[in-house]
Image (tube, rainbow, N blue to C red; front, side):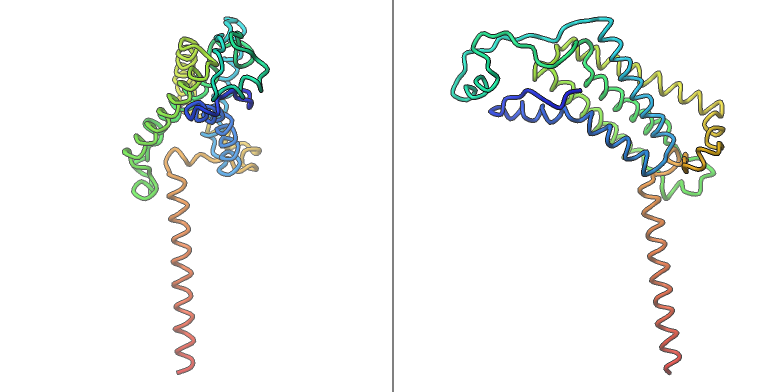
Length: 255
């Protein structure tokens, strides 16, 4: 994925679409940050599936070998003369944005996998066990999980549409990318479900290396933000209680 995005500064939508093109890079940074900060095996599995989806896109592009869309530059107006001069192109020049093959769209496939797999996790896998003592305190409500899933699906739709708007891909290339991403997400979700059902995750977590790295599997049953917040509130409450006890003790000694 290229950081150099062709856009028209005079077109606000084009500028917004150029920022959307950076979403996959931002998500990769988010993946790595969360893996390091939480050590959650579920995030590691999701990132592994995401990289597998990228490898599939790399393979499909070289098997299909379909070029990106070409377009003719129109006669420059007062608003885009500077753009044409900067690129060294003249009116009527046929240009093709982006590098490499265009089928399927890697951006569309990346976001489709991310949004669908995350939605499947939030709606199907993130469930509190009946015996969990944190069920009422640190379990993300279903309505919040639906809202989060909807937001990420909308983000994927915006990123996919931006690729067509910027002429990096045809609508067909984007649709194929979305389809590949959705299929990959369902397939990887099923594979990880089978791995969990067969007990492989528990066996791996018992390995010395995983224990040394503090790898854990809590996010399935807990909202880590809420659980961490309640732990913090409990400690603050303890400090306040201890502090007030010390004050009362000193007052008793003085009297």
